[in-house]
Amino acid sequence: MKASTLFLTAVICILSFTSCSKKTVLPYFTDISEISEGTLPAQEYLPTIMPDDELTIIINSSNPRATSLYNQPLINPSTRADMVNSGTVRSMSYVVDTEGNIQMPILGKVHVAGLNVEQIRELITKMISKDVSDPNVTVILQNFTVVVAGEVNTPQTLRVTRNRFTILEALSASGDLTEYGERNNVLLIREENGTRKYVHLNLNNSDILTSPYYYLQPNDYIYVAPNKVRQDNSKYNQNNGFKLSIISTIVSAASVIASLVIALTVKN
Image (cartoon, rainbow, N blue to C red; front, side):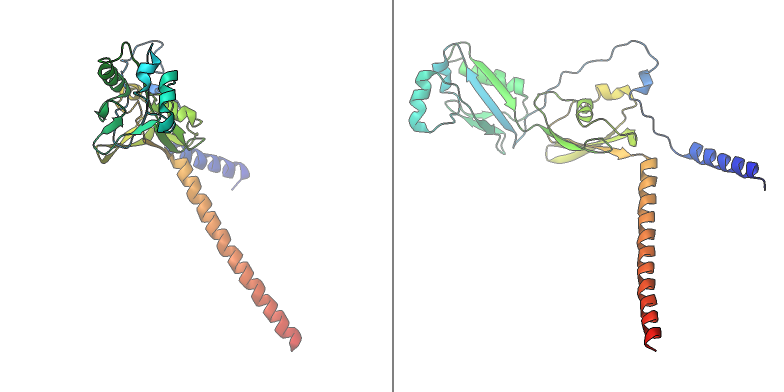
């Protein structure tokens, strides 16, 4: 067979293999990529508080001395009077107990599970307003972390400093997906009411922007699945590594046997 015929046959085989393999669509939102302008419904979302969540609550007002009593002090009780007289506002975190409550100075037990930070702020503001004029309440969720793993450039655990955080922001903060990441197969695992739920998300479709999983919740786990090319490469590397290991063992064994044969021959 001529060299040109062999070359043409090889090219046809390569093209046939490539056309049969599954290709990864790299762009996001391909369903609206040809549309120059449009609108999508926006969502109002804040994560709801659950047992074991950690909240920082700071209470202040135009009269700091009046509201300082409602703040959990960071200093020992013997100096509390000095703190009250100076109007110093100090606070520390509250951990939500198994019944969904936190224990606050003056206010006592406050049920916060199932509420978001804005609702908790309104609740505490209402409770304090009975005794203090125009209180200013700040509520911060401290333990908002999400894990991003799989085919992203920087797999990591992200500590979120905002009350609203999207899956797109999490992926962006992790260096975005690699070229081997399946945009149409992003797994999200979420704990809700004692059970773990999971969903496969398609970033090629703009429906993700209105999905209930677009905004993340604390302790969400995101896994980007590898595409077929990555999996095939991994298998190829593993097989080659195994073959090299066998060859190395055989060579080593042959070397030992050869050394023994030479030693016996010289001795005789």
